[in-house]
Length: 394
Ligand SMILES: [Zn+2]
Ligand SMILES: [Zn+2]
Image 1 (cartoon, rainbow, N blue to C red):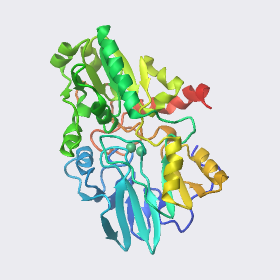
Image 2: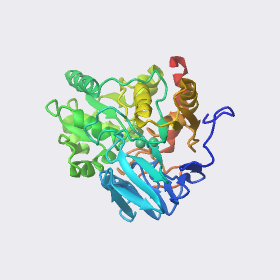
Image 3: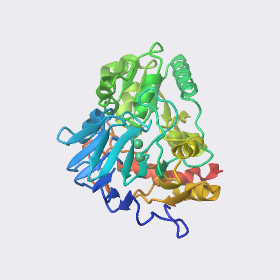
Image 4: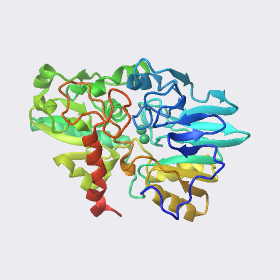
């Protein structure tokens, strides 16, 4: 679904080019978010579909170094750049700029002989208290993700969604139900946590979420107290607590200790009615860490780019829309992921808890990245989802 014969592809002289191993900068001889081991990987952020293990060296933002190290393991060689700091690699000037997606997420700017390209990585333009805000960077060519690149995706303000979540938590308490909210363990879970009202009741988190908290606290992100869930605090918290866990924990024995549970999922996909019916969720909260449609168009505009490469999502739709707008020349950059519209929000949830989830088997078709990598059952579920969404399409 990534390209059609009518969709223009990457220009031959592109400063950033798709290759078998991922995006590559020929004069700089480095890769950006490669999916195979390479000598030098510049990594936009620590989600599993962007940060693969096995590379000789990594370059990432200073803000994101601790989470990337937590994901890749202590043996990974990671160098960091402050946002805006420049490094010259084989004559190519490289700098990283906040992408507003998760802690430490970067856009990657490369400049060679006066030509400037910016790779967005995953990004959002909405404010998020757990990471530096997205910063538009002027460039000639902008490579943008488009996970939610359809006009139907327009996010409500985070403050409204968090108010809904806190109100739902209270309502569940009145019915003596424990509240469980599922979210990707890196990024979304911490953003949720930051918005919870700890005066309502105890906050418990799955081990995969807990493992990322030290890096967030070390970066100065304000988070309410949260305990790693265990048999004891789960029993004590029955009917009162809220639990944040990765979606791969849904329907697993790990959930039993919380008693009668009201279930919700926090994801941009919850903007779609069909998705909310998935797995008998009680609620779906459309809280996304990806740019929505108005944000996508305004972000492209703010770069001043004349040329736009589109990847990671609804590629054909966005390429066609941009080319028809007449303002920019757009082209498709294929990715290797099948479930493209679902790619990033399916990273590969960490399941370090031994009793966590039977679904959390090692990844099947993915190169073994970090120990806490993919759950194929989860990926398959998500790749099936577009069919379920068809009835809600615009
Ligand atoms: Zn991501
Ligand atoms: Zn992604």
